[in-house]
Image (tube, rainbow, N blue to C red; front, side, top):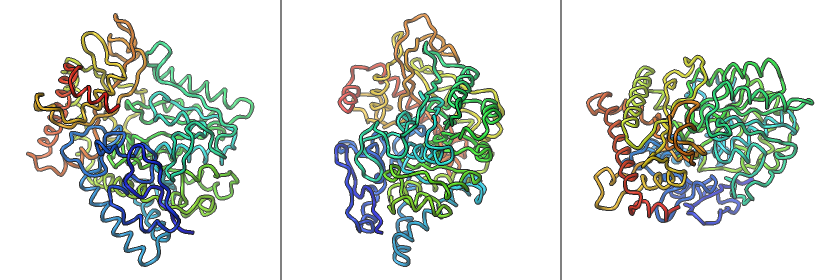
Length: 557
C-alpha cells in the first residue's frame, strides 16, 4: 500500500488542506525543507503570507535575531536542529534507495523511539513510545488506549482544565478539536469522532474558583477525589488527566491525592499525565511510568523543537494488553498512521493506515537534537543556568513598574525528583496601567506587537522582534495583592485579565554551555540582558497604547 503524506507543500492561512494522490509520497520528500516542517499538522501550522509565521509567530527556519523566551508556547527552529533535519532527510533518502520508502520510514521512526527513551533515561523494554502530530492529537490516542483497557463508556476528568490546551475540551469527549486533521481530513470542530465519543462524559476541574481566585492545592485535591468518586459509582471507569505542568507552570493534583485514588479505586482509574511542557525531572517521569500512568510529552515547549511534535509514553505493564484488545480505532485513523505505533504492537498497527507524516517526523528529528544536546550538558551546569536565569528574570519583572509577577502555585511535596527543574522555569505576569489590569484582548495585542519590529521613531529596544509566551486568560481579577489564593482580592473592581509569560528553555542551557562570552556567567548575563530588552519594550508598548504598533497588531488579529 503506498504511503501518503498529508501536507506536501508550504501552506498559507486560508488555503484548503491539500491531499496527495496515491504514490506521491516519495516526491513529497524532495519538497523544500521549510514546507515539510509545517506539513502533517493541523491549521495552526499554516503560515501567514504577510508575515511568514504560523499562529504562534514562529517561522519554519532559524531566526537567531529574535529574542525568544516563548518556550511555553512555541519556538522557531534553531540552526543546530535545522542542520539535523536536513541531514535526516538525506539519510532517509539513502535508506529509501536500499529498502523502499515504507520500510525505511518505519525503521527510522522505530529508531527514534529508542533514541527518545535513551535521552529521557527510560528503561527501553519497559516503556513504549507512540508518536503524534501534536500533544492535542496524543490526547485522543490516550483516550482510545483508556477505552481499550477500561471499556468504551467512561468519564474523563480533566485537572487544570483552565490551564491546558484549548483543544482539550473536545479531545476529552472524543470530539474533533479543529477543522482539519493532520492527515488532511476536513472535519467539523466539536463533532464526535467515530469510535471514540460514544459513552464518554467529561468533567473539567479548574484551578480557579467561582470568585476568580485560585484554589489551594488542598481544595483542588478535594475536587479531584469527589469527581472520581462520583464517576466510579455504579461500576463506572475514569480516565483522569492530571497536570504537570500547566501553562503557568503549576502541577495538580498532589502526590498524596494520587496515592489515595490508587488505594480506593484499583483498576478503575487510568491516569494520564499532561506533561506537554516537559518541565519535570527524569526521576519524576520514571516514577509516573512505574505507577502505570500514561504520559503525554512534546518535543517543543521546554525542549524548543518546532511545534508540533507529540508523543505518548506508555508503561509496559499496560501495553501488554493491547494486541488482544478489541476496541475500534476507526475514527482515530484520521489522526494517526501505522508508523506512529511501536512495531512490538503488530495488532494495533494493523488497525491504522500506512501513511508517512514527513512533517511530524522532521519536527521530532529537530526535537531529539535539542533533547540530546540538553542532556549532554553536565547536571550541575543545567541546575546553575536555570536557577540563575530564573532568579534574574524574577528580579527584572519585579523591578518593572507595569508588570506584576504571579506567585508559584505548588503542592507541598518532595521536589528532588525534578532535579534542575525544581525551581520555576515559567514566569507569568500581569500588566497594570493607570490603576487597571490589561484585558485578555489587550494582552493579545501586546503579544503580537512584541513580535513586530517597531517603526522608526521608537527606542532601540522597540526595534527588536521579541517572542514570549501567549496570554493565558485568568477571568475576572483585581489589581490588589498578587498573592496565592488572594489574586481576586483588592480595593478595585474586578476585571477580565490575562497573564503573559517569559520562559526558560533547554536551548537557553545548551547555548549558555557552548557560549564563549566571558564564560558561562557571561552567557547567563547576556540572556538576562535580552529579558531586560523585552521588558523595556513591554513598558514602551504600555506607555503608547495608541501607537502604530498596536494599530498594526489589531489589524493582524
